[in-house]
Image (cartoon, rainbow, N blue to C red; front, side, top):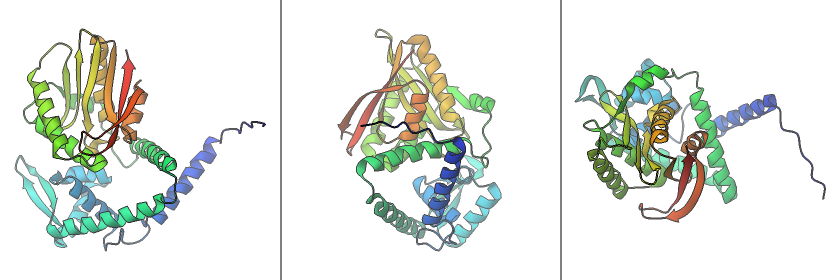
Length: 322
C-alpha cells in the first residue's frame, strides 16, 4: 500500500477554518438569539448567573473579569438581575468598597434549569461522537480556549511586575481556607469531588504550613484584596533529591492572565535549586493545566484509575528533570 504524505495546511487556511468553526458554534449554541439556554435572559446575563452560582460570594469586579466585561456593563447586568429577584448583592465585611454576589432561591432555580438545558444540548451532540473523539474534542477545545484567553484583546493583562509584586512566599493567615476553597469549587465542578476532598486539602495543607519555614519546602500565594487567589507548593525529600509540586490552583477570574505561569516558574526555580527532579499528580481531562505542565518540561510517566476521591477518576503522574 502506498503511503501519501499530505502537505500541511497553510496557516491562513487554518485561521479561516477556525473562524468558520467559531461562527458555527456561536450560531448553534444560540448566542445570536436575544435569549439563551431556554431562559428569557441575554447571553451575558445567563453567564453571570452560572458564574455566581459556581462561586457564591464572588465580588462584582471578579465577575467582570471572568465575563470579559467592563465595570459599567457588569453593573448594568447585575442591576437587571437584582431587580428581577435573581441576584442578591451584599457589602463585603472586609472591604467596604466591594460587594459580594449570591443567587436568590429564584436565581438558583433558574440556574438549575439553565444547567439542565445546556447538559441536554451537549449530551445530544456527544451521542454522535465516538468516545475517543469526545476525549480529543475536550482536549483540543481546552487548548484552544486557553490560547484565546491569553491573547484576548478585551482583557487588560496584568503586568509581569504587577504579578510578581502580588506573589507572597510563605504562610499568611487565612490562606489555608482560601486555597482549600479554590480547590473545592474547581474540583466539584470538574470532577464531582465533595467534602472528603476539601477536608483532605485543608488538613494536609495546614500540616505542611506548620512545617514552614523549612529547607527545601516552599509555599507561594498570589494575593489580591487580602485573599489568596492562587497558590503552588514545593514539598520534597532532600535525601532522594526529588520534589513534589502540590496545591497548584488559580482562581477562574485570573486564568489566562499569566498568574499561573508566574507561580509555576517561581516554584520550579526553587525546585531546581534543591532537587534533581520534580513530580506532580493530576487528573486526566484537565487539559489546560496539562498544557501548562508540558510547556514547562513535565512529561506523563504514569496513569491509573482510582476512586479514593469520592468519584472515579484517572490519576496521572508527571515528571520534570532539572
